[in-house]
Image 1 (tube, rainbow over the protein chains, first blue to last red):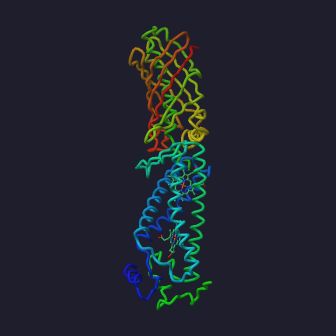
Image 2: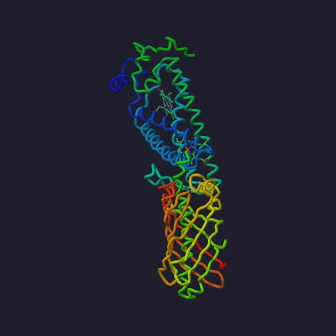
Image 3: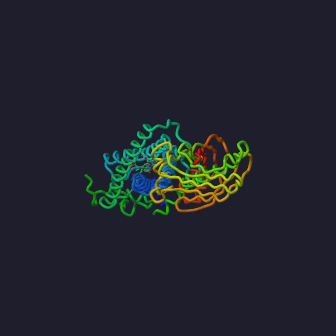
Length: 217
Length: 203
Ligand code: HEM
Ligand code: HEM
């Protein structure tokens, strides 16, 4: 996709739809998304008391290691955002949609930092003081917070709340992506999959395609 | 699924250690010989509830789990003429474990560690007692926890012998993985350190 993308970027046709996401953005996006869905699944399961206690213990440890991995990847994404040019919105989008998608992306990206930080705060304030040993290898220090039952309860609530908020927002975001792909048939999902948007979206001559079947509204 | 629990054996190991310690106490009795005459210490003693059965498991980066057991029983028989013929037996009830907070206690009792519902006791039976100093001895014995029996060793030091009461300090390290209690390693070390103050009263 790269080669063609490049062209798309500066293309005088103005097919903004062709603006590509670079391989780094794409890898980070899908890796982070997959990890987050796994983390929410693990987080939900490990909090249910009926599960085997030994399994529960290891789920907590996996959860912390994978969660900190998301924190690192999300930080990398923010840094990359600062230096790399962010693709233009797909031409198919109206101003309100652009605004909505930009806001959703920014909030999602911030939650990808906040949720793991709040989880780290749970581990750091818990009176159980269970060390965080990243993938059983590297000892991760606690955040400089006082350990107390109240602190642990507070951060637990914040962590769970923000995690489920992230899930809700990601579901909305995914639904929007699927809507664009299957109903509007524009290149929104394809360009995040690293495929030239041309197939569907790059209307032959860079016209603003919605006319075709998009009920734009 | 319960098999996974096996890894929690570490805690169980602690129990074993405790058991071992008890035998060691018995051994200590011979050690008494140094001050009071051995014949004076000779006799059969019941381990009293005034004893302290403490254990600890260190964790990576400092700190760890500290706990004790509130319910146990045992007997020490000191052979005045042949210390090596002395015996110790000790039974510990893991359900009675206490630690810094309830979550830890419940975890220790659970299938992950002691599995107290299935294995309500941890036992130690001495097999050999060897005097190592005027007031010290080493006790070997078989520790059974979670249905697994292994040989363990405890060091016993005589602390006091007055009236019909005898007091020992018993220490020993038990590898919890040997009893399928290694849950939480390597975050929590495999070694369970037992430090027991045993008081026993002559029958
Ligand atoms: C994007 C990353 C993360 C997501 C999506 C996530 C998600 C979740 C979810 C859904 C729960 C269950 C909440 C509940 O139902 O009560 C949870 C619990 C938990 N998470 Fe995370 N988590 C993430 C990162 C982390 C990190 C980095 C840590 C620690 C270093 C962590 C530590 C915890 C802990 C300790 C709990 C249990 C809280 C409690 O006992 O109340 N999480 N997480
Ligand atoms: C927890 C899960 C997710 C998070 C945190 C997330 C986050 C983001 C963020 C921050 C962006 C902005 C672009 C960038 O990365 O630089 C983005 C774009 C995108 N995401 Fe997600 N996403 C998630 C899941 C999904 C899923 C499940 C889908 C598809 C079903 C999806 C489809 C897309 C698409 C198509 C774009 C590109 C939008 C555009 O072209 O402007 N995302 N996502």
